[in-house]
Image (tube, rainbow, N blue to C red):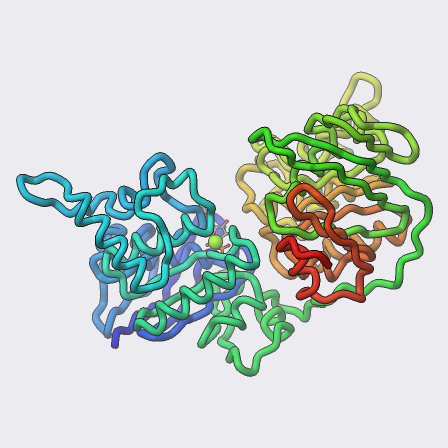
Length: 502
Ligand SMILES: Nc1ncnc2c1ncn2[C@@H]1O[C@H](COP(=O)(O)OP(=O)(O)O)[C@@H](O)[C@H]1O
Ligand SMILES: [Mg+2]
């Protein structure tokens, strides 16, 4: 049995104490859940363990022996394997080529023995239930399968200690379940596993022990058998967090958004929306559930002027906007929280202040004819940073230097920070920690209670269930089911999400 131990690990970055005297231990045959908000120091700690960073203080022990890692090569030799948050595969290479990259088996005459390599990939994949085609090219396979390739890669290097950094962030609910099956298989095969997440349900479902990191420090351990989501959230955030969304029954008014027979073609020339019709009324939250890739992205793009509409109509407050530009739609008092914050939500080189006034700089109170009132803009930004708990040293740093979750908060703050009639939000809390999710959910309900119409698209079924007054389920470019919020279970919606008739 092997044991990996971290003792008193401390790591400072300029202005940040990323890890503060952290102790951690994991042994063969167990899954340690490492829970913490965005920015808590989880990735930093694992990067130290993997030899990517040197610690300022503390030590790493394997079976009681102190280790000196001057790079990932040393960590790998010591039996440590890491599946990174962002996969590091070469997109144009095959599965096998990626697995053996850098450690290719050499056959007779110094030639790389691809046949042997393929056989090993097959053996590992069979042994651990990691089904994958050794000849498939990475860019052609779904993210869930790419993740298996990363795992095979680590096992190919004989890892005994496996680190998974937020592995479920990119997976669909079904893929998450499969992934948990794989984790349990690895555990049964005697591997020691560190599973990093900020999701409470997941850490409770799969871990044998749970360690919680907050602002760099280990704040406690929890027992998965007895701990509740509320206990974990409190440990993680440092205060009690409301995990259920409190809201009154809705009392919807007139239709604000009217969509009729909408047909939209996707990037791969496929029929992304095959004739979709629905309304969203004032004072109502309509949630769109579905597995990613069933037309939700194209729906939001079409409604916000980012994608051409082939046929059908869209009206906002009675005015037709089917072929309007994004700025024209913005002019109809529409807030848009986009799915891809780096591409269409923020201008990365711009400061937080500049991003906050991004689509209002030509309006009062920031513009007085020809001059721009930067003081008003900075005050607004400072105000929103405070309200939305954006973790940043200043409002005058570029958006690119914020973490993903904090970037998302800036977008939500900007979009909800003005008077709107219609909110179109795609994955509004993706990558955000529970403390901030609570706040954003409260703000969504407040917008509703002030009379806005809200369309919330989310692949997090729990989020759709918690927020929606009405739920639409998308499958293969169609709305295949509609439910009243509060009267339907996740299991029922799950069936419609897979295409079954309700
Ligand atoms: N290379 C780096 N340079 C400077 N600061 C960093 C660096 N990496 C992480 N940080 C900071 O350290 C803290 C912990 O970050 P991280 O370990 O990525 O957290 P987590 O993985 O828990 O979200 C954050 O405040 C982050 O901004
Ligand atoms: Mg991280």
